[in-house]
Image (cartoon, rainbow, N blue to C red):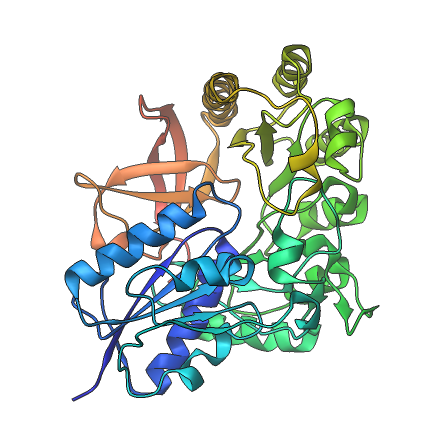
Length: 439
């Protein structure tokens, strides 16, 4: 009788792509992949070091797994497993902990699934982690997250990712094209390019061999994929040539997600970001000049050490004046072994929460304003397989979220629609104006 495995992923799109790749390894080894609640023989929990309360979340997921399957073999992998292996190994019920370099060798460390009296740790120093392991998500979405880059050479004072994932490194363009062709052959319609710092794509063995723009041009020629989306790119790495290419691209969609983190040059300096806000203004203006309907998402951190109320209001007003479409708001939380933890001017938790709430409200306002600029216009929407209270959703090329009554025939289909009205829940109501665009 075959053994079963269930997966749980915390964190980013990159983690999802890697979990999916580990899942394919288990499938090739004869395991059946089951739902988390289906009493699996093995649970693999892929952790994150960026989200708050990583330890608490990891403990809770382990506890839930053992509730469904008390004798299950528990493996913890990912960023938090790299940073805090000893802490994780002491969580009751954990059998094995694997760091950044070892997570893709998980099957080699699983023997007969006998639970260990004490968790084993396989975790080498992050400085020795320099191999790139190709990954992409598959099987559960109409879009696939394709990992093109890993690690980071930047040294932002708040961030643990370089400690958890190591130096910047990338796959070859040739290998990525092969993976994109595999994805296209599987029927997936959209690829989302993901990595830690994808604009820094092209470093192998410590040397720059390619540029991200070279990858973008090559991927645009892959047949069978309708859309390619760039998940996130640093403003200092988003060149005019990339913006102009996307504007006339066959496959790259008019949607950029550009981390800002703060609208105050003082705070950007304390964060050790590689740009000032003036560059950010320039990048947004350049995008909107060439692609007026482009969707622009923004990452911003509130409550960073030294952020006074005046600094925050400066950030709020700066974003309010920007022609952007939505925000991802992060509340600063202290991380061990980062320079920021030693900085003066800690912001009280209540103030961090208040600032976060203000920016979440601003994000809703920005999204609605962007959607209202789209009313009366047309676009093709790719529908996903979600079902909630009788409705399903899809996204336009420029990331407008459209809500329609559930119809299984719409899943993974492109439909030409006209945007009619913004609904109370913040999604778009649209009317179909043509038959399915591509079968």
